[in-house]
Amino acid sequence: MAEVDGASPKEQILEACRRDNVDLFHEVHEGISNGQSKERVAEFFNSITDTMGNYLLHVCASYGSYDVMDELLNVEFLECDPLTRRDKETPIHSAVKYGNEREVDLGEAMATMLIEAGGDPRVKDSHGRKPSQICTPRTEQLRKKLLEAEYVMNEGLKSGQQQDEDEGPTGSASDSE
Image 1 (cartoon, helix red, strand yellow):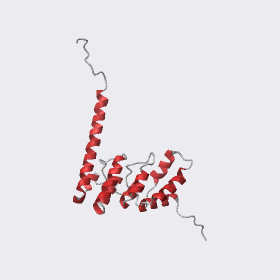
Image 2: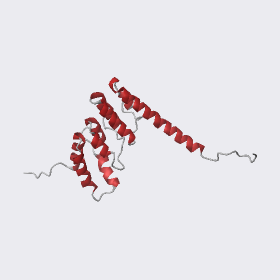
Image 3: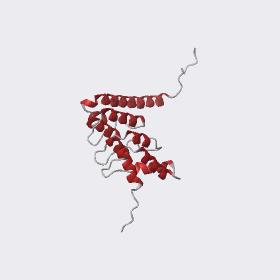
Image 4: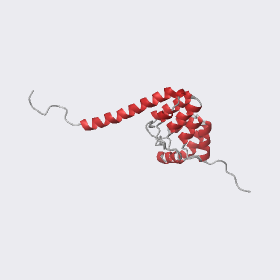
């Protein structure tokens, strides 16, 4: 008879993401963090996908697992915008889909949390669509938030570039008063 050890840490983390099981998440996180650098811990979480090629944040967003998503985003060096294997979607795309198909408020809360953690709402999927472009009429408020976040990010990049270009003497070059 084969020896059975139970679920692997990867399987347990995926299950925690599917079931929004914060206790299981903490149990596995503590087990793999023991003596490991923050980079190695992040590498573990960043490398996990389900059988469809969805990363942990996608799994959380697809199942409405807000609390585990929040815990995952607390992991230093976690990739906020991994792309799914099939459609090259970000976790924000998955959160929008959750809002479109299930609970609008929860989908909006997850998308907002992802953006606040560093997710980029401007990333397009393999069909050329940004998360704001897959919103339905029932997620119109979410679409507005996504467009606002896109605008802020675009303006932040422009103002950051402008500041870099403007650095230098600000006074007049003449000696006259």
